[in-house]
Image 1 (cartoon, helix red, strand yellow):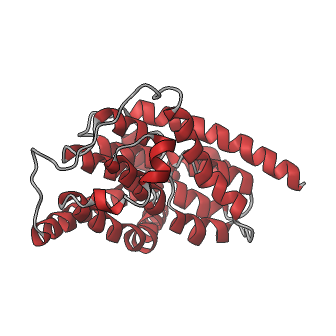
Image 2: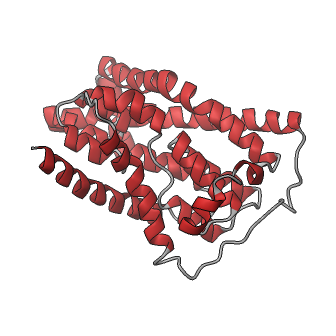
Image 3: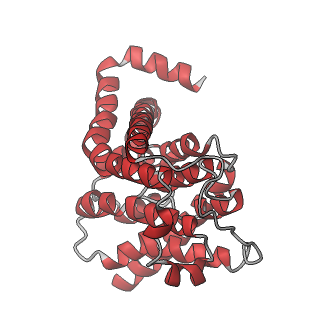
Length: 292
C-alpha cells in the first residue's frame, strides 16, 4: 500500500516528485560518489589481496586490548570510522564473504562502527549547523559509538574469542589486476544501489509533505538524513545532531543491502542504532545545558 500510494503521488504531483528525486540524485552525485566510491574500491582491493593484516599492525597495540578484535576486525573498525556509512557494514560483509571474519565478530562490529563519515560530518553537517568549535560534536558523533563498542566488548561479548584469519582458505589471494577489476565492479554496483535508496527515500518525502504539511520538514531526517538535514538547515541543531547516529530509515535499508547475504541481524543493528541515538541525546542535553 505504501508503494502504491507513492506511485499515485508521483503521477498526481510530477513536478514535486521530480524535485525530490533530483534532490536525492544531486546529493548522491555530489556528496556520496566522490567521498565513498574511491574507498569502496581501495578497501575491496585490500580485502581481495588479503593485505588487511599489514595495514592494521600499528593500531593493534591500542585497539587490541580495548576491543579484543582480530586483525581483520581492527581493519573493519578503522575503515568504518574513517570512511563512514555504509563502509562499516560493507567492509564487514566483504570480510565475511571472503571468509576473513567470523559471524560473531561481524555482529559485534556492526553494533558500533557503521556511522556517518567524518568527511560528510565536517564538510556538510557542521557548516550547515554553523558550528565553529567542532571537538565536542566530533566526540558526540564518533567518541560515543567507540566507547559504546568498548562497553559491549567488556559486558555482552566479554567471554567471546574472535579468531584470526591470516588468509582465506576458501578464496585464494587475487593478483592486482583481478582484485582491481572485481573491486571496481563491486564498488560501482554498491554506489549505484546507494543512489537508488537515496532517490527513493527522498521521494517518500512527497507523501509525507502532503499528509503533514510543514511538519514534514521535521520528519524528513528520520526517513532520509541528507535531504532531511538540508531542508532543516540550522533551525534545530539539537534535533539534527541526534538524528545523525540513527541515520534515517534510508540508511537502515542501505545497511540491509550490504549485509543481506551475511546472515547478520538487521533488527539487532537497528536496536543498537536506537540505543546510540538515546545516548547521543543525553550527551547533547548535557552539552547544551552547560552552554546555556
